[in-house]
Structures are given as structure tokens and as C-alpha cells.
Picture: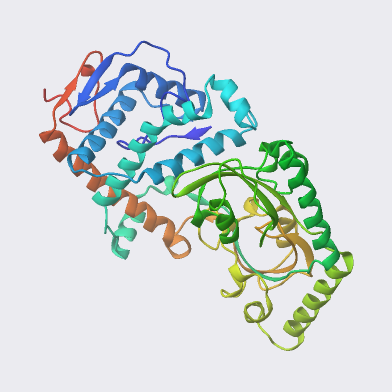
Amino acid sequence: MKIFKLTCFFLIIPTGIIAQRMMADEIIGIVGKMPVLYSEVEDQYLQLKANEVKPLPSKCQIFEDLLCQKLIVNQAEIDSVVVDESEVDAELDQRINYFINQDQFGSEEKLEEYFGKTILEIRKDMRNDLRDQLLMQKMKGDIVSGVTTTPSEVKSLYNSIPSDSIPFVESEVEINQIVIYPTSNDQSIFDVKNKLLEIRERILKGESFLKMAVMYSEDPKTSARGGDMGWTAKAEVDPAYAKAAFALKEGQVSKIVESPYGYDIIQLIERTETRVHTRRLLMKPKIALDEKEKAKTKLDSILHYIRVDSLAFDKAAMRYSQDEDTRIDGGLLINPSTGNTKFKLDQLDPKEFNIVRNLKVGEFSEPYESIDNKGKTVIRAIRLKSKTDAHKANLKMDFGIFKQLALEKKNKEILDDWFLDKIKVTYIKINEPYKDCSFRLKGWLKN
């Protein structure tokens, strides 16, 4: 079940792809030069219902939300606001890759079969909707740019919330880590390179890169779909990968590329000036047991220094940890879902969860084998830096939550004022049966 809270124009569900149009198109409203179609309301209503959104908004609410969307896109055109086509491409790639990764599909071929269209046709259908969404996001950002909240405003918001409506905060933890990378020996590196050369030769002689990637690639994110990386810009992939990919011609297969992830061969499917669509076949050198033991012994020694020599765990992480992403911050982990340092317990990897739940604040684990965010084998020790118990949110412990709520409230008020001003100066026509709707914003029925 998904909880839905209607806010003008922020109900964004692409039409034409996710839901099948159930009714013949009929213009039920006009904002500026932009029509609102009967099928748009039906599509979004059916999609929200299928997704078990609660409370399910009425069709009048959805219609008003569409009016807001059209109003802001119409004003963006008046103000000559544009979005870079590379931004649209990036969003398209993300959406297409999301669909492909769903259990229902799992490959481009199944996605095409489901919609009865090629990937290019699906992209074309989604493009205008996504461009409008990006325009709305950009306009919204401009409208509320520079809006801030003061501590007194946050406190006032907190005091205005009924006691039984104050959110409940789950238990959260902060974690430091020290990481040591076991090294691959020369033989394991040679074996991987030799295998990749054999596979590349087979591909050059006519075998399918896609099938080879499914069979041999060790990249869990792409191997099931034949190594398909989707569309990526240079900044979105490792520099070595980007350099090799952008040097290829369509259909060409690269030589072996070394990166922090392992060793790749890359096939270019298609490209633009700024983005490439590639397949990858990634293989990683095996780590010998004795190399893992060496890394574990090294980390054991570091932990011994912490225990007997009053060396703080975070200082040891800065000095000895080999993970460059966290070392500078004393090994403090960042939650990729939120961008902050706090993790709910169910957001942890199962192995980390089992370790953390047995630690007290300030305690650290023994060395153990794990996998880093690049898929590489590491020897890691983690320390429980802090832990909060599940509780009803309060200003002292959860000021950030209420600051965000206060900012959202202020942004909404500013956006509502903007909408009311633009409604006054924009041509708007509402047709039956929506003239009888009770709209949240006044002025829609002026004509």
C-alpha cells in the first residue's frame, strides 16, 4: 500500500506507457495552449488504483493536479525555460533500465514484447512526458530558490502538529569501518585477462556479446540483461571505462579495460556526442585464501593497537583504511538511499545487520570478509558509532525531520501563491464534467 498526499502539480505519472489508455481522447480542459485530456485523468486514476495508493485521490483532484502541471509547463514555455536534451536522455535511460530490471521483464526483448514496441518507440513515447517533468522540476526549483527556515519556524511547526500525528522514528545507527583489500596474485590476474581475450576472440568471430555477458560477466547489475549498461555519460562511469567506451565505433568491442571494478571488455551499441549505450563483460581476479589471511592479520593488528594503545577507531580508519570513499571521514559510512550517515537496521546488508545488532555503542567487530560497493572482496571491521531507539520524533533528537517538514510547508505556500498569480493571467477553460469539481485552488473556473 502506498500513501498518497495530493499537492498541486506534483502527481507525476508518465502517460501512454505505464497505463493503457482506456477511453477515446476528449479535451476536458485547456491551460494556455495546452489541452488536458480525459484519458490523462483516467490513466492516472487507474495507475494509482493499481498501485494501491491510499487514500485514493478523486478524479477531480487528479484533474486539478494536471491543470497545475499544464500551467507550469505553459509558463516555462512563455519564460523560454528549457532543459538540456542530455538531461532528458539520462532520465529516459533511468526509466528504461528500471523497467528492464523489474522481475516482470528482465530484458529489453521482454519489455518490447510486453508493450508491442521497440525500445526506440518506447523511448519516443516517454520523451515528451519526461521533458515536461524536468521542466516542472526546474521551474519549481526556480520558484522556491533560496527559501530557508529558521529554528523558530521549525519549533512553531512542531508545536502545531497534534500529538497523535507526530511521526514515529525507527531505530537508526551510524557505523565506522576499517577496510583492507586483499591483493590478487599475478597468476589470477593473468587467468582473468587470458579468459577475456578468449571471449573477445569468440565475439570478433561472430558470437553474441550479449550471450557471452550472460554466461561469463561477474557484474551482478548487468549480466542478466547481457551486460547492458544503458545510456551513460562520462561522469557516470569509471574514467577508464568512459575513455574506452567513447573511443569505440558502433558495434566495436574494446580491448581489455582495467578499473577498480576488475577487468572489462566493452561493446558500443550506439552513441551521441555526450552519452554512450554500451554492454560490458566484467571479470574479477580471484583472491587466494592466503591473501585474505594476510589482509585479516593486518586488520587484526590494527584493531589490537586500538584496544591497547588508546588509538581511536576513527583515527585508525583515517590512517590505515584502504577504502578511499570513507577513510577521510574516519571510516564513517554514508547511506546511499538518504545521503546522510544514518541507517535503519533493515537497510543494512544481512551480514552487517547480524554484526551490528550484537554491538554496543563504541564497540567494534572482529575482521570479517565482505564485498564493497564496487563488488570487490574486502576484509572489514565495523564499529557502532551511535544508535537511537525507536521513538516518537522530537525536536532534540530529530530536528532535521521537522526542519524538512517546515521547509516543505513553506515551499508549498510559495508555490500556491505562484499558481494563484498565474491562474489570474493565463487562459483557462474547464469543460464538463469537471466544472462541478470543488478545487483546492480558487480561480480555475474564471472563464
